[in-house]
Amino acid sequence: MRIGILDNKKSYLPEKIAYSQYLQEKGFDILISYDIGELEKKCNWVILFMGFYPLKKKKVKYIHDYNNL
Image (cartoon, rainbow, N blue to C red):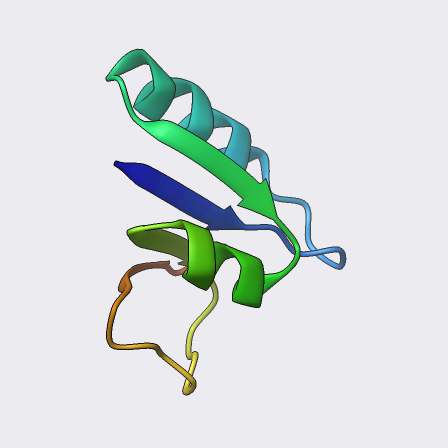
């Protein structure tokens, strides 16, 4: 199973590295990209670091991580 992580050029996201390392240790294939379209085409799950993403594809499952300080 491939899990995509949507990177963001504006935010500091150290959790993307933590998620990637942890999930790779568990045997998952990880793809980190700035391009949501690429992730939706190549991955079964996509992790998003945001509050709302209205353009979801039905073939992909999404995990939303909400950042708050």
